[in-house]
Image 1 (cartoon, rainbow, N blue to C red):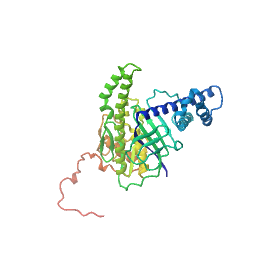
Image 2 (cartoon, rainbow, N blue to C red):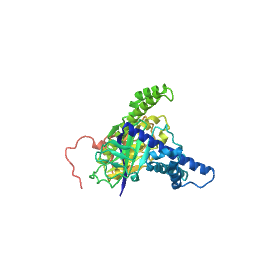
Image 3 (cartoon, helix red, strand yellow):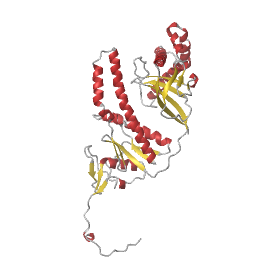
Image 4 (spheres, rainbow, N blue to C red):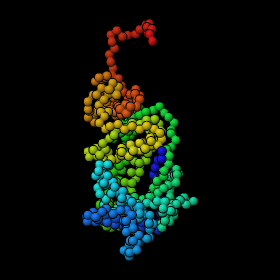
Length: 403
């Protein structure tokens, strides 16, 4: 099985290389917008949908010969062609959404030079390469310094250079590789209940505290946002203040992503099978808990668990969101009815077991996924049951029992 992975590394371009990258970003944006206008004009006139090959010849090859678009020759032609490919992808996703093949999304829109995120893509045809000194050689840009944090498993097929909202540059490589060697099998199988008070509660009773990266950074973010609101629009000081806000948010996002990676990797390495609940994140994001829900980042964490399980030979199961995991006793299986969120501990009316709400839900998630998980290791306390009259006291003699 061939696996396609994406590796991102920080770039540190020089002043001249930043200027060349800005020129590439601008040319790619102009070609994208020209292609969008050409197709919208054809649609309004009732003409056939222009093909990518025709647009490439008209908007790149022929446009370079005109005085208005002669500066397109200053960047690699592959960058401009990939921009048109991105336009094709945007239209394809839009039409697939209308047909019901994927979630609905809006039609392609014009790109602005004021967009805080810019990117260009180089394929093998652009003849980009990695130098013996570890730099990234890009056509008509030069050798850009890269901060390598790990080795690439194979030769990359494409590289995308990205400038994010915080003004940082990244090189994103796409590589094709086989699955990693399967990890040593373990007998552990767990269910995971995701929440806000605790980010994750495992079926064995382990609780992982929620870091609340956004909540902890709110004071600093509010001050940066307040300083931005006081700057005059269009001024250089406003641009600097916007960059400070973007960097503060990027720091929060990076910390959250690092936490997700560390926790998901640990869970996949230590357990043979992992089960989670399919949460309705979109619906929860519309409630008063929206900020905390977005701060937790459940969807990104579950996605990491899923692809890491597939890569390392582990089993990943996602159960339906309508399973009554908080209403069913994990010991006897009796449904005890819905409970308010304020109820964190409850006693089963059928068997008398006392449950921690989150641990009980995690055990039920594992059981609903078909994992051999017992509530014996979780925080379950059997309620005191009065002894029968004939069993009270001690027995001076042991009574043999048959096998």
